[in-house]
Image 1 (cartoon, rainbow, N blue to C red):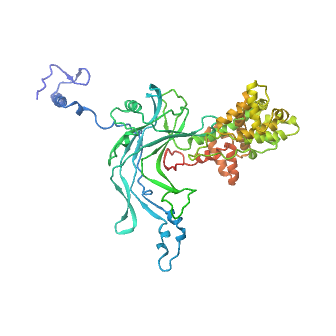
Image 2: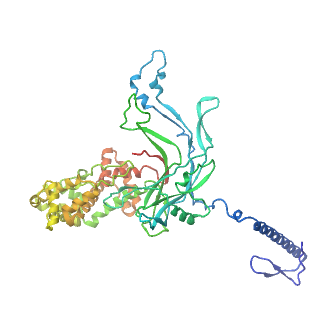
Image 3: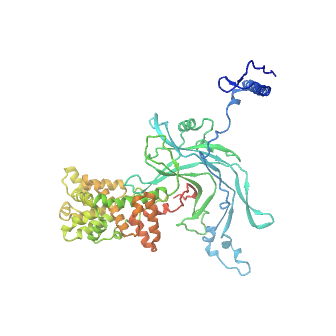
Length: 591
């Protein structure tokens, strides 16, 4: 080891990571010895670096590539541990093909125990099985613009949504008998390969237009798009082997193995703010139930009367904004019921503020017409299996028809404009007059013939409309109520009312708000925090008022009066989970 020569003067040169610098210090024997030791260490480190560089130069290029996954910052990945409970590993149920199909064989033995009969042995049967559940980790959904093939055999620039995730095989659960005690069961972990067959569905029940109402079901199935997967891998991390839903099924996940994947959706409505992603295939846990219309006989095929559901993982998200042109828009992990809670709160705020905006007094207007808000409730809405109101079913015209009928009965006729003005406000009164005039306004020959044909379907003539306009409007509304879907009704409305057809949807909305305002006027609550707070404050206030009503029937009418036909579904979703829940394991029966 080379030694450090003594300093020529009273300065020492210190080696740093930057340029050389001179540090003046007293020249003493201890200082010189310390500097010599430091220099020796630096020379040794330099020698080790030189040796490591020589060894690295002799290795092949593949050996120098980084291995493993990039370590993400804490909080970037949301990890949902595998379900370790034993609830699904041992299910108990009857065999309805025996307990119901062979009911004639139900007899009471005289010497054998009752449980020895075939029918009794078919009750409360155990169904043990190995249950596996994968650990699922994910990053919040993002958007990316990619070039994808189109039907015209050309590349098309399209924006897609994607979810980057990781799955890990942590083993299965098995129910076994405890040692020495056959009456006790315990759960144990079993290491076994797992075949992951991913099924991703992005769903939203957010209504995006007045015609759709507050709830409108949308669903998008995960797509296999190799071009999108390559672009996502380049954006997220080029060192990971990214699998789409097709590649993920090529081979099983070995015990302890983890694998990265991506789910991709195209043509997602950019206006959606609240949505959920349902993931099926993460576990083989299953539930079944007997169909309501199932019948059993002696020759019934096993499980023919049952419907089955695999357990799915539901992830809830929301987007703060409607900028459909920005890729930097973040999608946040949310919780179920947020959209419904905000919708209820916004309806309350809109109804409270509508009176000042339109100068209306709905409760006084209904009193002048001889009606109450309970008499103009929407009929129950048609609800799909997914829990959302059928988007093909247009808004009900029954409440508006009742208002027009009451207006036709109101005497003297000179009192009618004041009643309509109090109910709808000045703007609503003008819209109502436009709608009535639309049935008899002059039209060109082609449109006039089309209107005559539609009036004939309603059992009316042009003379009936001219002599009894309000009674004719009631018949028209009743005929339109029976017209579905919404697109067909809109076409019929245009044929009947011409350019005044949009007034029909506007009046339906105004009547909904007028009824909601009348309901609020009958409620006993402090409006000051509602008006000064936001939508969630209004929702909390309404929930308190609903909870204070002891009469379940009246409470249900209040919900429908305030929120319309979709009210029960909205309130059920808003109160189904506690605040802060962002995912859940659910069983969804296909219908």
